[in-house]
Amino acid sequence: MFRNATPEKAISFVESTVALCCCWPLPPTASKSRILRFKVLRFVLFFNSFLLLVPLLYAIYVYREDSVMFCKAVSLALAVVQIPLHSSFCFSQYDRYK
Image (cartoon, rainbow, N blue to C red; front, side, top):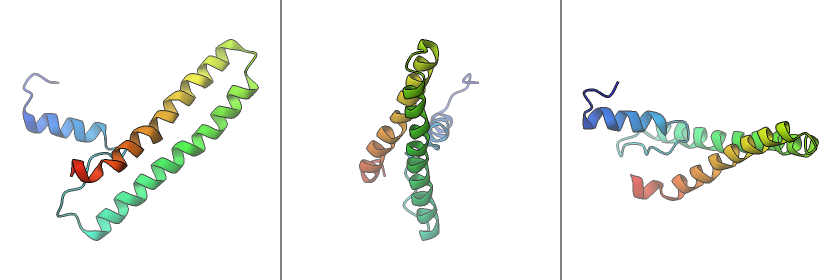
C-alpha cells in the first residue's frame, strides 16, 4: 500500500483518517453551505458520542460484579470519552489548523 508513498498520498491518507472526527479543516474557498454542513456534522458527531456514553455508563453500573463485562464496558466507555475530548481539541484549534 505504501510502496510508492508521495506527500499527496500521505495528506489524503491523513485526511481520510480524521474525517470522522471532523478535524480536517475546510479549504478557505469553501461555500457557506459546505461550512454549515461541516458544522452540523461536527455537532452530530459530538452529540452522538455523548448519547453512546449513557448506555455504556449504565452497563458499567449493571455489570459491576461480572469482571469480564465490566472491563469491556469500561474500555468502550474510555474509547467513547476520547471522541469528544479529541474533537473539542480540534474545534478549539480549528483556526490554527486552517
